[in-house]
Length: 308
Ligand SMILES: [Zn+2]
Image (cartoon, rainbow, N blue to C red; front, side, top):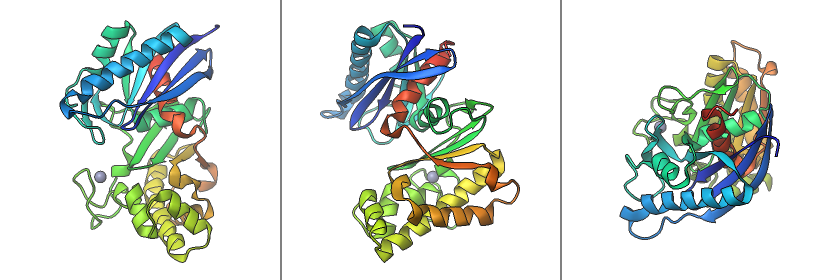
């Protein structure tokens, strides 16, 4: 083994996905990855401790099989305190997570340094180091799932802001008179482009059905995806105007929709981006799929301990 090895765990409500990555010079490689069902059932009071213990077990197992590990990164689906290593708010997991000492508990159990990162920022970091934005200096990333996750990178680093919340593209307001958003504001990009709104706009049960219906020529689904594409483009155009990025990376299920989504999206971008040349901005699909969060969490851990 030439480089150092780092574990990343993507803390999801359904599964814990994990990846071990090796870092050597400027090169990153995925060594192993797997997932286990998250222990989130039972009394909600006990869920944080059970899930944190499970993540420590994953780390010990990975350390024995693929180690020695130099760090652990955890991608959390919500807000956290980057200095204290505690969680502030997880939307989709049961239990009293606020203030839970996630990093300290896993550190105590494994003896390894542990760093937290938001799951969308982890997605972006993975695409920046190993995926569709490899080598880019500046990047804007969107991950379209249950909600709308976002990430920005400047000068080759994911910009975290003072508390890890920077890059919440989904909560930029694109219409001050728009529908309510789960964050408490209204007219946010997420209020238009989250999975349930995409399904509603297309008249389908879910996003995969919306994509399939549009590709099969269903008029309502085509109109629905066109509307989603235009709303996404307003948000992306704002980011392009502010950041002038090298690359815009779009991931998540609806990103597979192809022309029914991207033709209207690109047309709207052409009409909205006026300050920089859109021809010099690559608009690309994410490359790392559902593993991006765990890969990015591993990269974040490595960068936090100074081994990358
Ligand atoms: Zn919002």
